Image 1 (cartoon, one colour):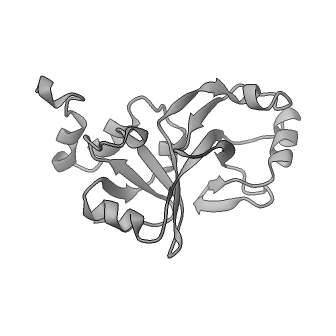
Image 2: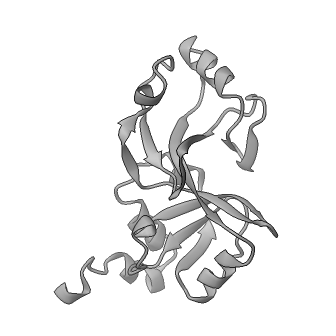
Length: 179
């Protein structure tokens, strides 16, 4: 099994009972002995970023990053030069100076993609390990295109990439009684 680390994906098993993580793909943005933080990549919300920040002149959906702190906003991006940005994997960064991001965007100086989230997914010390032992998650390396690709089929696509032993999980019916 691939180890959990910054820049990996957690793919939920098909029948994970927690509705916050039903058929989700989570990018781990921080992992250390104190716990883990991640962002759900495939749960678009009902808001656009302009609904939250009228002075950010761009059209972009806001995703539900997880059930923790839904009153907070986070973002992933391709802007290494953004002060305070934390590298997640080569070419992908988490957070940074949001005022600078708005300025670069509004001046037409952004040269890469940005994805916005409300809330995040978090695990305390040992909590994620316990969920892995219960086989709630499949861990795999993330690819840069996972973050910015279309989200509707991301869960199934990520599973399929793991080979034939996992591909069948992506085809599991949402309601097992329909099987």
